[in-house]
Every structure is written in C-alpha cells, then in structure tokens.
Picture 1 (cartoon, rainbow, N blue to C red):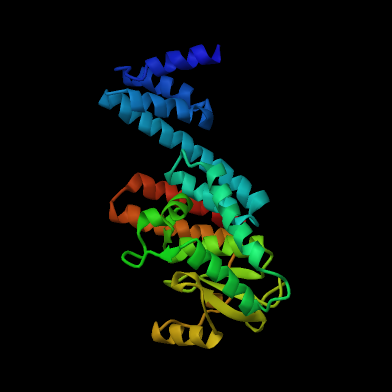
Picture 2: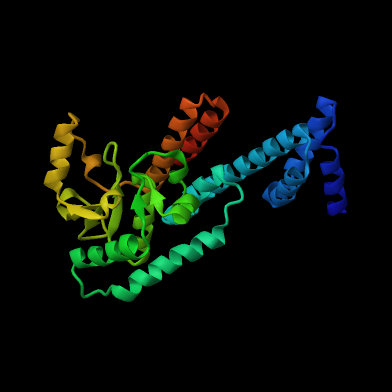
Amino acid sequence: MVDNELKALVSLLDEPNELNYINIQNRIFSYGVEIIPVLEEVWENSFDELIQARVENIIHTINFNYIQSELVIWRETDNENLLNGFILVSKYHYPDLNIDNIIDKINLIKKDIWLEINPNLTALEQVKVLNHVFFDIHNFKSNRDNPNAFNFLFINNLLETKKGTPLSLGILYLVLAQSLHLPVYGVDLPQNFILAYTKTRKTITKQDILFYINPFNKGIVFSIREVDLFIKQMNLDFNSEYYLPCSNSKILILILKAMKSTFLKDVDSKRTEEVNSLIDILLKI
C-alpha cells in the first residue's frame, strides 16, 4: 500500500494547482529521508523542468529537517563523537553522502597509523608518525590555491580529493588522533584552526599544553610563544580561548559559519537562514 501511494504521489509532481501540489508535497515529506533515493531517481529520469525543480526542493527540505533533528540528538547524546557531527554537517550539502564509505576510508588511515604508533613513543614522536602516515603515505595536503574553498569544507570531498581547508584538514587529523587515544584537541585561533597536544584529558589550562599542531602546514609543531606572537601581529586583544581547546559543538559551528559566508556572498538568503538555525541548535545548552 505504501509503495502504491508513493508511486501515485510521485506521478502527481506536475500538479498545476498550487494548493493541491502543497498537499501532495506535504504527504511526500512524511516519508522522511528514506524516500530521497526514490526522488533522486525521479529527477534523473525526468526531463520536465517543473518536476525537477520540485523534486530538488522536496529533497532539500526533507534532508534539512533530518539534519535539524539529528543535530539535536548529536548535541544531547553524541557530542563527544566529532566525526558523526562532521558527517551530519556535510550531509546538509550532500544528502546522498555515503557514510559507510567515509568510515571505511577513515578506518583505513587509522589502521595505518596504529600499525606504526605505540605508547612508548614521546608525544612528539607520536605526532611525527601521524604526520608521516597522514601527509606522506595518504597524501593529504592543504588546498593552498584557495584555502577557504567551499567544496573542500566537507568530509566526503576531503577524503576524495585529499585536499582540505585549515578547518576540514584539522578536523580529520583531530578525529584520527583522538581515535588513537592521543590527548589532542581543537583550538579556535582566529583565521586558523589548530590543535593542542596536552598533558591531561581533564580540565585543561595553558600549563597543560605541551605544544600545538598545524595540520594545514603538514602538521608542523609550535609553542605557546608562537601563538602569542601571532596574536600580537594580528593586533588581537588577549583571549584565553585562543589558546585552549574548544568544544566539538564549537568546531561544527566553525564549519557552519564558513558555509554561511559563502551563502552570504551568493546572496542565498534561504540557505543562510537554514545554516543560522543549525548554528542556533548547537548554541543551545
């Protein structure tokens, strides 16, 4: 019965009466994300511009509603899992993103690091191993031609092209480090995203930070004094947040803000509004 109803609804996507179409659309919405592959097939097989436009809108709305509800769940129950959050935010722009494929690729990199790393290594030696596997063996690199390019913000494109922004490269590097139980955390330094290797996993102060890592510069290691110098050169007022680990929610907000800046440039008010609502979800405690 469900299949028959769905087929009937899909066949009415060219309904000329707007009120009737809204009822059809709302019924399709009720199927949720499971219907997206069916709608994508309809889009591929249709040459009617009206039907294609309506299908695109329905897919986007269903996916956006799904991302909103899943982001609330992530915030409440799963916010220690940065990878899941990164995948969710990426799915906003890529509804058909293949999660299993992403996890398989990340597990392969993790396995290669795990084979070379051991707890007897010093913190610097561990980072050296991680850098070697990440940058030399798996060939991840910075997208220096356009460091903030929109498409390189997302986990699927990063894994496919091996190129990323300071933020996306940093998040993937962080996910790998934490999956191997290294005390590495993200730090929101203005116009940069760096990582801190710490002495402890408890409450962290500046004194607990051994050194910083810059994944956008092949994992180069540097000290607090260099962060001091950067802040001085940028004429920034002192803020302890520039030195200390930030939450996973804050990291996702950084991605969303980067997306938002692109939508603002494109004068895409609908997408800008949607991203603002996702940011609001993450800001709630």
